[in-house]
Amino acid sequence: MDMGWMVPVGIVGAVSARHAFTTWVKAKHGYPLEEAQNRQARKMRRMQRMMWMGYGPDGGDDIEAERKIMLLSNENEKLTGQVSRLEERIAVLERIATDPAERTAREIEALRDR
Image (cartoon, rainbow, N blue to C red; front, side, top):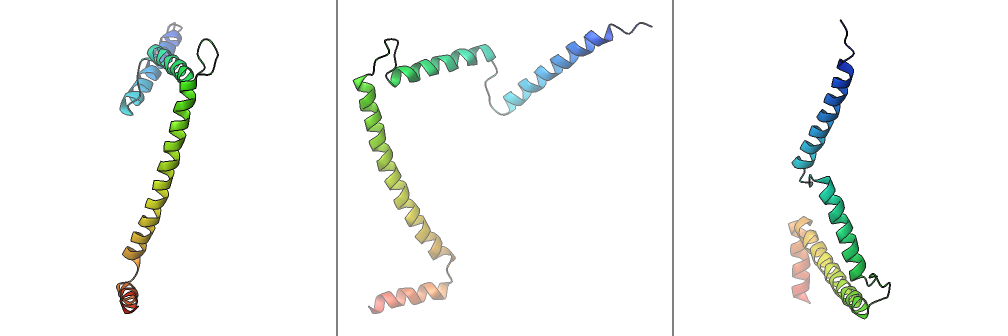
């Protein structure tokens, strides 16, 4: 009995099973399935990012891109300040929630007596 034909069939089966498993895992976790379209989309996003940053086909910097960067930097600073203030407020609320009730009551009474 010549079983030489089983090697290529086994290889094809293993490759097919690997592809099916990979596709199943991608679908389960919400990743896109089309590889060629993914490559095209990545290339398009990269080009759009370059154009947005002012590195277009002409290679020159764009004043509007610098303005966008400045606006985004200002917004980033503003949001960072908001986050730090919210973190401080959360820390106070956590302390109030985790401190014993007697201690909190004493502190409130001490503030009233001032």
